[in-house]
Length: 395
Image (cartoon, rainbow, N blue to C red):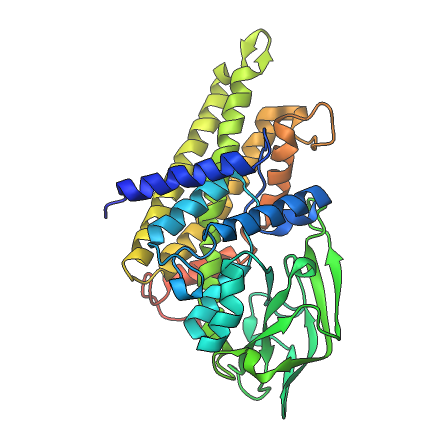
């Protein structure tokens, strides 16, 4: 495997860096990957929308997609470069829309690709994904949102939960039950988020950001041509979607790299008993261990990108990076709180806050990184399974 970038790819990296230098506010400390922090404040919301639209103007949102659907037709490596730089800078350009577009490009009709994917590539719309329900988290076979077929489409009744930024979405990609008698009777349907019969209730995360939503469907009518793929074929899309979401672990690592560098700078500048904090043997040891952990994760991430670029199976690698990425980010938060002491728990509103209160934020938010998008236990099953260690299914 050769992880070196070509001259063209390095030129693109510089282009992306120049874009973020130009568009991000001076001294911007960054946000975690994902759309959730848009709900922190109106200021963050407007910055996120602006960055999203400008990224669409530059064709950054669908780099690998075919040009006829608004993409660039670029390589997987160029897409990886953009995601790396965005995550490292903490730029608010992450959204569930590209993940939905990937599903539509893979399973949708020509009309659906042009109707749904092109506006995503242009940064004109936001999407959310409805998977989890009160009784269906890891156990996706237990999804109960009902989609009853009628003459002109489907009628949806039920509930989704933990749907990130649904209140800001234009469309929802929901997984619904279209056959109660079949274990695999799930269907993926695109729903206009402003449809009559949809109500939402925001749920605050442990960080205090109200970014999750309960979404209630009360006789919501959806056109038949909003079904993605085949009726009762939603499990194929669901498994594909999990593969996309679990690569999120790589983005958290580039984000963690920024936090590590901020902690190193803090340790250099902070004086304790007349000596820089970075001279403390315990501080040095813990920062060094974080650097090792992050480097290991990055190399695994390069392997994941290489496999994708060469058309190889990515289930095992994406599950591995999902596990290691979540655990490493939790260690970054823990070590950051230990090094910063009483400054660690201060948030950005405090005049005594250091690093903009980001260590407190990542310490709290990282608690969910081994759960969101599939638990660590589920990811380990994928590593152990057919495309990993080849072990038989659990009984």
